[in-house]
Image (tube, rainbow, N blue to C red):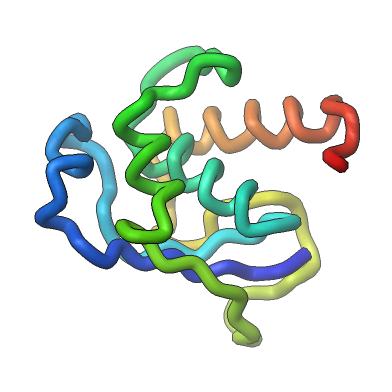
Length: 118
């Protein structure tokens, strides 16, 4: 599975100001099948969601910030420190808060049972 590096580009943009204080806004390394999933994973794991997730109604400010090409760069990297073999995961920052780890695991289960994307 590819490894993606995501970097916030403009942390002064108002889209970031609506994040909860415990949210992480910085460089992230994730293992994901594609860029869209990498961005969504960052939204879920790093955006400060607590408790149960409703994947049909993600938080609008978080989704907008991590999904925006203008706010976050996203590209694949090839670095032996981050193995391509393994499940969907946030590899950096590490370790994730316990509630973020639970969110990643829930998201992986949802993706595993969802119909394949066209």
